[in-house]
Each structure stands twice: as C-alpha cells, then as structure tokens.
Image 1 (cartoon, rainbow, N blue to C red):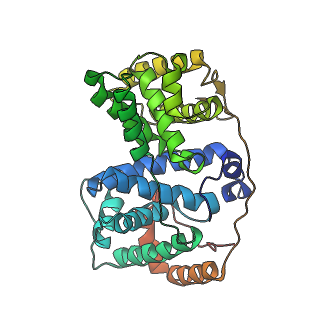
Image 2: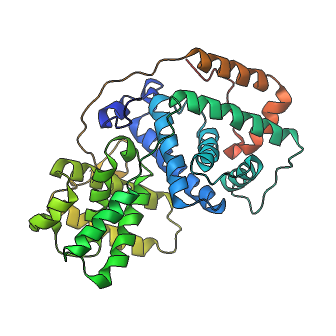
Length: 341
C-alpha cells in the first residue's frame, strides 16, 4: 500500500464489520490483544520499539482481514516473531511460542514439550501465518513510529523555555506512556506519527497540570496539530483507559488510576477535546468521536487461497485439532472454516 494512514471511516468499514463483528467488539479485540502483546514482548525482553512494531503489524493486518476468520492469538504471536526479525532483535521461534502460550493461558511456567505434536502444530501454524501476514500487508515492513518526533518536540519545548529542566524527564516519560498506550488502538492507522506525538505531549501537559498549551501560541505552534486531530486522538486514548480499568477491576492501583484519569478526562472535557460520556449498547460508558472517510476494499489473492488450503490440510487430523484446543481459552476449539474469502 502507498500509505497506511487509512482514516477512521476506513476502519469502521473493516472486513470484521462484514462478518457482523461490531465496531466496539473490534476495538475490544484490538485493545486486549495489544495488551497481551505488551506482556509477551516484555517477557521476551523485546525493546519497546520492537513491541510497537509488532502491534502496528497486528493493526495493519486486521484493517484488511476479519477477526472472525483469523484467530488473534495466531496473529499476535506471529507479529511478535516477525517484529523481532525486522527490528533486529530476533528470538527463536520456540521461545516465542513457549512464552506466548504461557502468558495466553496464564500459566506459571512453560508447559509445551518441543517434541510433542501440540508444539509442532503450533510451529507450523505460526510459520504459515507469517506468510499470510506478509501477503496481507503487501510485504510492507517499514514502520515509522512517533517516538523520535516526540523526543525531538520535547527538546524543542525545553529549549524554548516551555518545559522546566526539573520537569523534563518526568514530562517526557508521561508523554511516552500515553504514546505506548495509544498502540492499544488503531490510531497508528489514522494519523501521521508527528500528529500522534503532538497529541500525547498535549496529554502529558494536562496530566501534569502544566499551563494549558491552547492558551500559549508558542506551544501550539510547536505541536503542529489542529483542534480536530487533537480531539480525536485524545478521545481514543482516554477511551482506552476507561475500558482497560473496567477490564482490570482487581488492580491494587485501581482507585489511584481512576482518580488520575477522571481528573485528566474532566480537564479535557472542559477544554473541548473530549465530549461528555454516553452509553453504548453494552451499557458501558464510552465516548463517541467524529469519523471521516476513505473507501478501500481488500481483494483475495491466489496466495491467500493456497495458504488457506495448506492450513485446512493440517486441521484435517482430529488429533491435531484436539492438540490445538489446548491453547484456546475456556476449552473452545477453533472452527475449521476457510481462512480466506
């Protein structure tokens, strides 16, 4: 593809929607899988940049494929394995499979025997899934992250006297935290890296109770982002925090996080960057933003069909299917439906 800036309307009309997966359910799948990839990547001792690259591959893939046709565990594991090679932090496939299987199933230690049929089936699945991902994203492994833009902008703000020396390190870390958490959404497919960096810097100023950037022309000039773009990114990141806290009610720091995020969101509402909450069809409190559009359709390729045929032949063995069921939550068995239209 010429550009991976697809726009929010493109994502609303994703292949998952054609398979009757709602926009909220797709967001939930992206968010929860991205969090899982963070945990797995950290245990594999990947640098943050490598984890972010894996998450970008994941988001790209599901912009063109359906969550119904490809199980997110397979795609997440393969994206981590692929990103390790792309970012020159390769890990052995066995290490990736063992660690990802352990974390997905919330086990205390690896349990897969490398000589077992369970492991061999997973190994073949990941290798074939790697080919599927590469074909889907047109072998485009180039990823421009917002990290450099963020650091460069923080330096400029510091040099201009807009950030004090004693605040610089904490401010940069806060902005980086927001940037890392933005990877739990498809923001990386909606905006240029510099826009994302600017929005997370803005969030850091509000979070740290610094002077409002919108009241200082020098601040906004260096951020280089308009009101609509800033509002959309802030809204989506705040939605991540609201829903993640709902997913993890047992966290010890729940009250502290709730308090901080409530204060942050309240300030964003007052500034006009985040609208008042509304209730969705699931009864949870979320925020709805404006969408603008693009129109693009995924087309199947002969390679898609061949890969699907190969994977179907592997599933033909009942023993293999039963072995594979061991990695599924709640004893679910992956359906043996064709993986490409």
